[in-house]
Image (cartoon, rainbow, N blue to C red):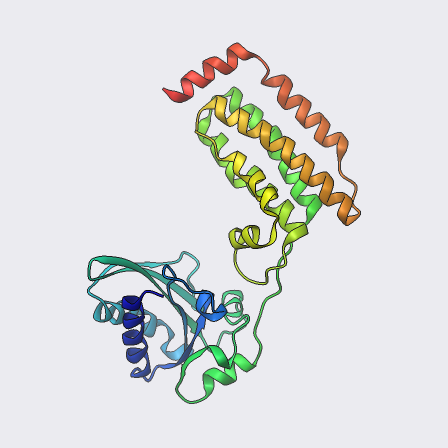
Length: 291
């Protein structure tokens, strides 16, 4: 952990301890897991009763501004609610910019999903401070959420459905629809396919799960989708991705005793290739996409 950031964190904690509205707090994220490095930031959850939840959250930027050289950004997440709030901040300490995240949990609304996920894996050993013992008692309740494992066959159906959709966006020369569907649906379906077999990580989003759980060679299969936003490159990326997806899907279905939908995959692949095989069309659209 960066020493300047640690010094700021100590100031923030001192301010929270001096605020009677705050029951206590605990470490979440890499600090909880003991995996910090020089680029890590603190992910601290502060426990507040419902009566003080909103005014306490509103005062956090004042605490941060008083603890650093300059508060540049204080950004609330879109999912913030009366149960749980996340604030992602950029602060200046000397000549360096740092990220500083703050979480506020409503002690009276612990059944909310966001509250539960920020208690998951946390115990008394992760407590930063506990004003009256309420923080330890709260964590002993064992609030948690189950790890979500994607459905293999749904991931396969999602993939081939959106591959078929790509054809009309190529024909319409709609590069923005192509990019959206390639990355929001086709790429993410491939991610879900791999996680449906390999995910053993009980925390985090898909990114650390892919990095830590999926074999390195298979991880690289996902990188083919990240192509320049011109029609020729996107078509090539989709073609490469389809071949790798089918390889992964057949292997995963065999390992899980599932029937791979050969007929669907064969027909969608043939349709995609047939509709986009006109080289003059491809060259014309590739030029248009670059202009």
